[in-house]
Length: 145
Image (cartoon, rainbow, N blue to C red; front, side, top):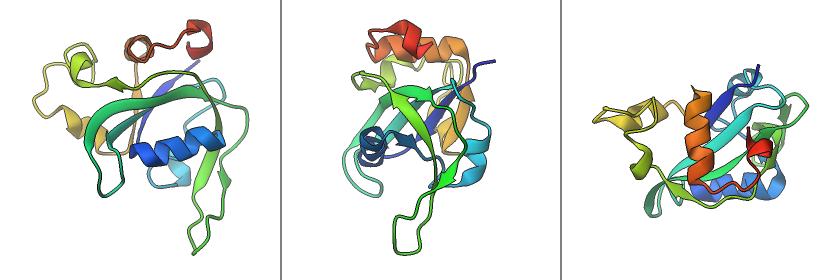
């Protein structure tokens, strides 16, 4: 059964993952990646352009499919060894979350809608994923679904 996920990261970090064809969740922790399986959909939400600075953007910034394989450690130097999984990212454009707030099940009717995203990763419904796919202008819906 296909599952769908939102990972939360600054846009600069998301773009490194897109360029490298990988995802990291919750600052590189292995445990959140263990729940994902090959074929699962993943979308990234970026509250800001930079991790501790930058412009507030509140935007979905990347979307793709988890590829076959297990989470693997990657030595980034300086003692930081996050865990990653490979992702086939899809051509898409950024999509602000604001127009979707009253349509997404995890934000609808919630004044403090960002609270659900504070954990760094959440599982979402297929319907929520489809709304985000559409908002991001993914041309090939079969590769996203």
